[in-house]
Length: 287
View 1 (cartoon, rainbow, N blue to C red):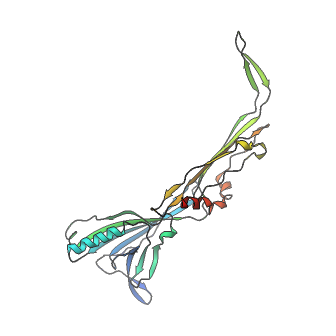
View 2 (view 1 turned 90 degrees about the horizontal axis):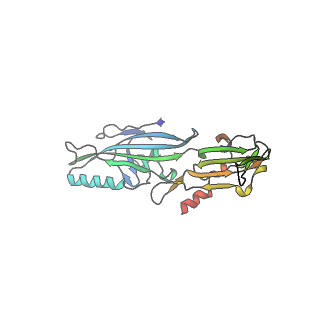
């Protein structure tokens, strides 16, 4: 896990940072909602997610915002609290730290550049109720998160199995009208049959089925593959789809014992570059 943090001290004092030729005050903005100058304390951390192959698949950026609303009267404070709650009820907004002249700092999240947009995962919560809390001041806590994809990671999961049968002699049992069944050998050797069975989950689109390991012995009319629905994420109106599963199986027949092993993750990872911008992803987004 990679972590980074910005800590704004006492919210009753103005937070200043060097900007341009002098000092500037920093504030938080979510969508069109702008916090008061130096009102909020912000911590930012990054958490990596890994697929089943141990590869970094995505990075989640988590913002924790703690602040103090202040007003001269309880009525003004109530209005400020309601505005805060209404602003963070909306998902998928841009988020950032800005200088008092409106210039963006180095910390910000463009919702459209993330997987499923910026999400409000907790709050606004109001953990304090003492002293002037609820009358002229109100402490709040908010958590937001956004996911970024890792580059060049195509698969979330892959596995393949080879099953073998046959090759030995074939015996049958004759059943006379009277007496016990009689065992009779009808063939000294039989064909070898193999079942190539596998599954994979593409991170951003459906993978292709693996090519037959025994193409010269394949029964093309018995080739199978199936696709299942992907996972949906993101707010209403801005869906993001991931985890596209596919399964395949093939049943070749040979006269000699096959000598082969299943495909491994490393082999297939370099073959499926067509998954980068799949048409299937667009089809799902339009549906």
